[in-house]
Length: 349
Image (cartoon, rainbow, N blue to C red; front, side):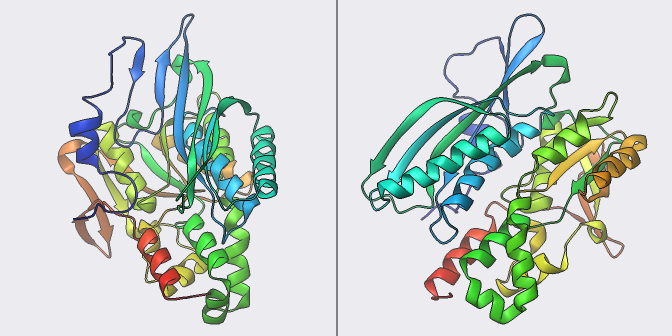
């Protein structure tokens, strides 16, 4: 029996990963935990080191520049949830043997550029070519930053009464990657204008600016953030709420689903609320601060929507749709992966 595509589930993290993390050190104040984007190691003088890791992308149908963008910014999105930008980067590249030396130089030049643009110094790693490497994942990267410990945000710090905000729209990255990977099909089925809008949304897949604008004001009121990856906006909200040990009420009608995302997801039989949505950030904040945060983001051309609130744990995680209240179910497998590979096998162009 094969495992589902994508990240391992909540129970596996709790039953196996969290209890088997090598030697326990008292300075590791935040280790591996479901729904938590980073780890934190306490340092002297009130500072801490924050670390986060993610796979690196190498997707031929997208291009080398676009793959490098995802490689850098998907890791940076995790670090952004702390309210701080990444400072240092380590990269391990397990490259396919079909990748030419020239293509590698182009790919790495863009890795360098995108790291430099956000202030990341590349400090080391490993690079090699691997026989039989046919995946769209070309290794892994780790970003590190140093910051005052008392100012570092962690997704598990959300509190009952907090508002839940979502920046941008659902399924930004899924929509963009599907459109760019199957351009003829998307253009023919949705129209040229929607296709071009979907493609142009690719460079909106960074949520670093969203997080820094939201959190780096004195008394911003932000208590926690979580970036949207596998499982989409609803999956990310579920993860943040679960990590914090509370409940939530989410208004389905307020979830931001754009026309472009709706059309492309419909073509691939996807629900945009549950699709990989890099570029969106889930923010929990003090309720009275929500309008200020939304306004500050809007001034920087980043839409932000209040979609619900954090509640006590015994109230559960609820999704309200047309006055019907249901438990929000966590989906172990993001449907994006199956949709992508099904379209590929069908020969969609």
